[in-house]
Length: 296
Image (cartoon, rainbow, N blue to C red; front, side, top):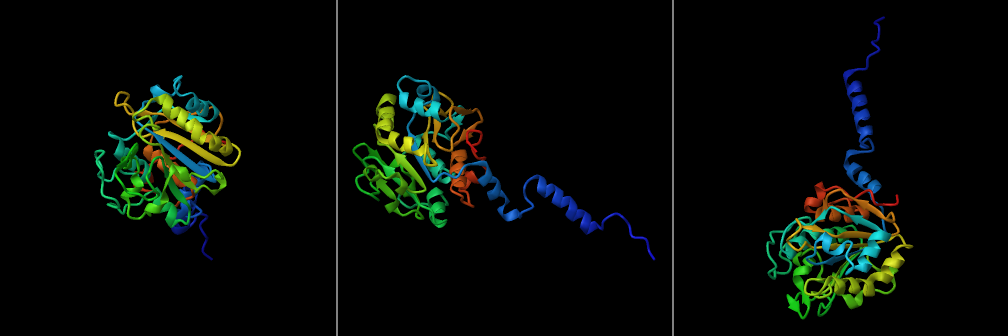
């Protein structure tokens, strides 16, 4: 009778080796869903995320400033990114980067043709996944209006109109922001007008606007598994494009900070993963989640 070797056969040895390697990186459950499983474990899953975007101010102009007491109260009661950066200048390409993971060829603030792109973006991904999304735009003349400007409203801060795969009806006026926060979409963007967003008016004006209009939501979010994100499109062109980014809500560790370098693509990736999306738009696909500030 031949003596059986104690060594495994080559196929068995390879399978065993692969199992060890795969287990070490969390892949043994299946290569297709591994990335999603890792992402889901690294960030929370809030019921609602509201992102507010302000304009053209550097980190040092807002964080620690006496002109922004409310934003700084969110910082101390929530989390602060001390190395958050925008992508470029001027404003408009940064909004496209934050919403779609790429600037989509936009290089200036001129009024683009509505629906010029069919690229994947946060709105189209959420809709395809059966999840809700909307934007709330101060001084937008009417829901779904694609006008370039109206009074203090400017479409250059509203990238969703650039995509044919996002219904214009999802762009609402800020007056339509619900008072019953349980009816909010899974993900919402809030865009103040040119004065309220600190573009044409002061930091103090924008800070007061935020306090007056979203402090009730922030308080509610703290006890209802929801999140408020306050960020900026770009800096004042004098600070290396370092911008304020603050998180507040129940999933956030109070008083936490992160010194990791993040940008708009990291924020987009984090929101996608918070919503349980299995696809990632543009550069968000290779961006890391924002971590180290969550309660679990």
